[in-house]
Image (cartoon, rainbow, N blue to C red; front, side, top):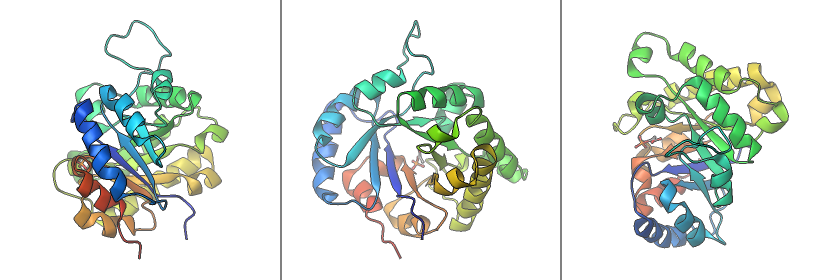
Length: 254
Ligand code: PEP
């Protein structure tokens, strides 16, 4: 039996105003009241963070950013720093989401720089990795995952690395309704864990949580989350509705 506490994170992407985020929290909190099995994290757009931190105060719900810059501060119009996220009440941050990599030029190297700064500010980084459909088709899934994980972890000190979370998100499964089969996900997670062991040592690898993301819904959450290698989920579309996200959080453990 794994001692890794499952983590279920909501990635709201560019959805919800502050008022809508408060409505979500008001509906969501009673649905998960007393739920302690899993770590629950809401990652709203930046402008909603203050509202979500305030309305979840006193509950076990954590709040995370969806992105951050790697510098402390500076002339970086439109960016936000790890220190700002932490000061606003965030405890987690998503790094290297495939939408950031594909649409906003994020690279393995910027993910690594961001990871260092997130750890400096004691944020729990949720580092996203995953292959494109063409890469899977070309038999390159393992190569891509090994590279993304190895480069994200460059020069990370093992004593700081304990808090890192990795999310395996096959790009072809994000927002498409297609999910990796539990076997595909389990195989990818083993590949990721093997690279973490090479980068940071076996003990850290065995304790690191590796989430699955890609069209997780209430209907498939139980099957996916019962895979011993899957330590939680990063949920996009299905996290926008309080009932639906609460059902995912309440997946049945067999
Ligand atoms: C995501 O954005 O990380 C994600 C997995 O999205 P979806 O659940 O909509 O596929």
